[in-house]
Length: 287
Image (cartoon, rainbow, N blue to C red; front, side, top):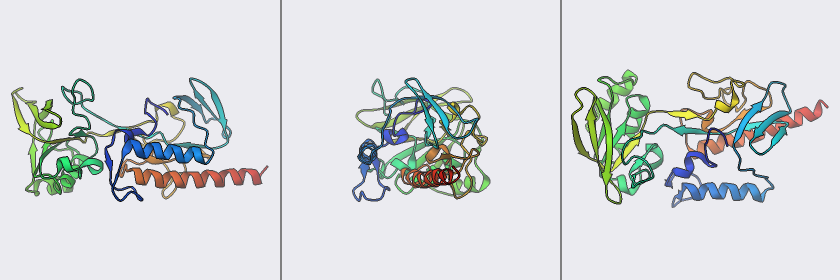
């Protein structure tokens, strides 16, 4: 683990996973994580549930990995530490004190938007970039109306994404608007929102709220030893999991800023494992 990301990452806070092969009726995110772990242990994996504090990649393989409990030397290394969806902090938005996180509030429309609690109901998305426009458009397949709460008086999204959202009759753009409170009973029923211009408050009835304000990849512990893009994601060679350091590979959301799905993470995990195996074989041949 790294950057305080729990084992399983965002999947542990996802409810129904509908697009992972082999589960025709869907599966809960935490249960899927448990099955991943059981399968790994069955094939001989030794798992240490610890937080990695630092790594040393400067001298090549073997690489030094340091946690609070131990120091490990690894001939090859796969970084799959994931990314954390950015969330807003306001009354009712969290998990504690009666908050509605996972009870109507989510940070992944593609993951959760098709759930029965959202179908045919008014929904809201927070954000003004391409991701927000894309998620709003996706949610129109299920919701009766989708409000997009935009902090500023303009959108940051590309023109084509703006045009797509503005031309969709089910999308309502609310500029200069931020959520300040979520309310309901057992599920989210509405939001109190505030104008960023004059501070006036009002309420909107929604049964779903989706944060689309970006993600933070768990790469701080690398301390700049791998090449990252401007948003902190690990850069890999196209079509591979190869990083800027030979023998170090990256898989999952830590190197994927576009798709961010469990099934795509599993695919790149398979790629990284095969590439690591090939790397070890090539090193043995040169010994």
